[in-house]
Length: 120
Image 1 (cartoon, one colour):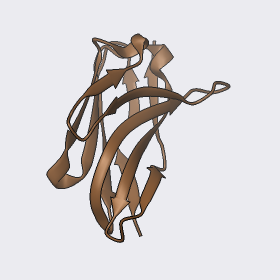
Image 2: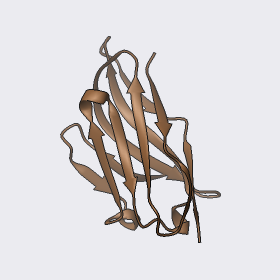
Image 3: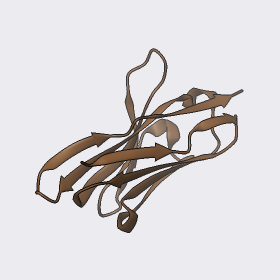
Image 4: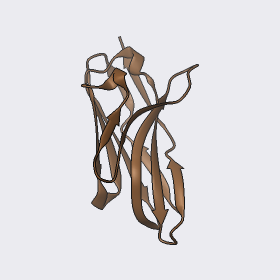
């Protein structure tokens, strides 16, 4: 069994910072792209940032210059450093990963979600 476990959400004031972590565990051979999505109340889930196995990154325009995605391949972990947080960043944040298992199957996995609340 392969799973993603997230941590690091919480309540922060506008202008503050949070760091999200997402660790993959189980029968993992390799992990391709990893990313963070978010879903605010009444809105569709959107991609916040992603990072390839070669460390190429992509960000939604609204977080550029404020958020940084990174990964530790040895630890099968992806991070999202969020600075200068705004109330509109309030959402449930989900980790996503494309994993190749030790039986060479590809699985797209989602974390359980972690709530980030930014107060004004």
